[in-house]
Amino acid sequence: MPVHVFTIVLDREPDDVEFDALFEAAGDDPGIGTEGGVPIVHFNRAASTLADAIASAVRDIESVGLRAMRILDEDLLTLADIADRIGRSRESVRRYATGERGGGGFPPPVNPQHEGTIFYRWSEVAPWLRERLGMDVAEPDRTLVVANLMLQARPHRTYVEHMSALTGLLAV
Amino acid sequence: MVSAGRHPKKEVAEALKRAEAAGLTVREVHRGHRWGVVSCVPCRATQAVYATPRDPGTHAKVIGWFTQNRAHP
Image (tube, each protein chain N blue to C red):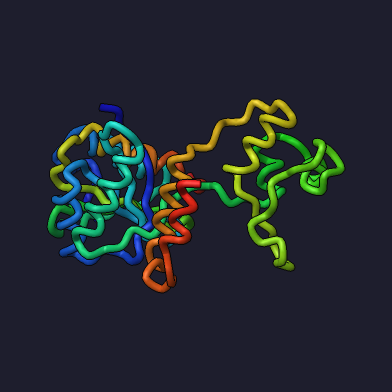
């Protein structure tokens, strides 16, 4: 079975009992630590698919009383970050975003109404760069993107009236 | 602080030596399954080190990745 590598952000740092329980539950030496002061667990998990690997890791984490908040990724980027990633100037990328170059249709920002830093999703921008500009950029891993959205939706689901109206959109 | 070279698993001990050589801090804890912790103070990043990892080779690799990912060697 292939080994999948990913990092999950926890809701809090494990205490001594939770730490040992997670080591025992996971069975594959989970890399428990912090990144930028944020508690994380790094997994090298053998499973038939990445989705299965993430789901079993989340269950292991939550079996010991911790909460899996999200998968660590670099999907949220500023235009400057995108420029660095593709080796173009910031001004070029700004023109892609405004439609002055690239023929328009650049993916919308996550927070367009915000007056400060504006973020874009690499998982949306990368396909646009490939299709419109023929750039050889790495395809984002869609499983990680979906896993993250699932994990972030879970804490809110019990507050949503008629949740199935929204989850039904996944089938459309 | 006791030398990181004393981890009972050779691969892990070598990974810890490389972490120390790269400027990271290795501290022994000896609590439960924990042998110790590697940390990078500027990054506020830590990585637990197990006393008896199931797969010492992979555990050593994880410590190696942790060391390589630091922006403050």
